[in-house]
Length: 117
Image (cartoon, rainbow, N blue to C red; front, side, top):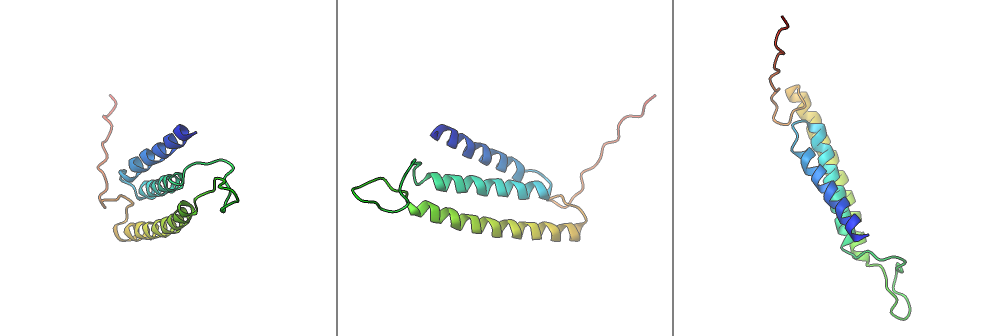
């Protein structure tokens, strides 16, 4: 279970970094979203993965769920949503100012295919 969870967090992080390094703003926004999902899963796993844990302290030393990672994940979700909204507004403003959705503001040169004989 822990190995599968770690692989999912790693895959989300890898895909997020790959998309953040792209040249289009939509891919950058998706990459930041995937990175925030990976951070949320990582924070949630920091409270240890327990099955059938009580949500509050029980009688007799029964294992219980740690509420701190859950609170951190809720906070990270709100911050991630605000960050995504801010980046979308920046992307829209950049598109309106430059006329392109490339991150650097330059349109890549197109290579013409060789003429057929």
